[in-house]
Image 1: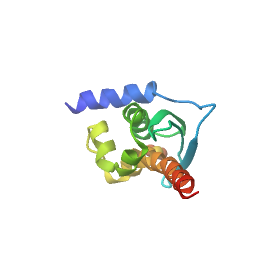
Image 2 (image 1 turned 90 degrees about the vertical axis):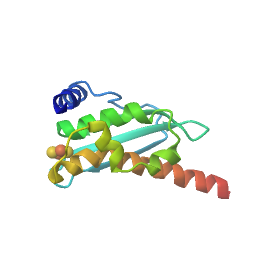
Image 3 (image 1 turned 45 degrees about the vertical axis):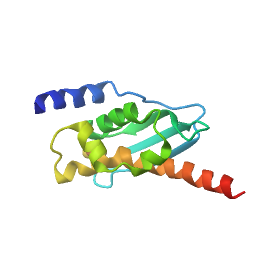
Image 4 (image 1 turned 135 degrees about the vertical axis):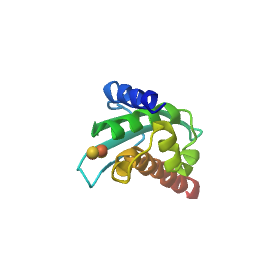
Length: 132
Ligand code: FES
């Protein structure tokens, strides 16, 4: 069973979904895995209802970090930003579907970290608008 998940991870790594840059992103964030220096950036487009309309990742990293970003990108389109902010590590680990060692955990969670950072930009903007 693990082989199927490993094959899926490899496919996402070789052909990552939603990779590149958005011309009209509303929010973006980037971060790196301090253990290896690999970087990941995410851009989000959010519609008027606070749902994620589009997403793009860019950067470089290992198969686990790239595949988790690619898999997460498929799942979050259409998701309310508020729901994204509630996601935890099980979201990513379930998508990957294999045991992740403690040293690779930062690789696996990098995409969720940058997604949440970008979403916090939306939450902050929304609060500012509501307060005005
Ligand atoms: Fe750098 Fe995984 S080894 S993100």
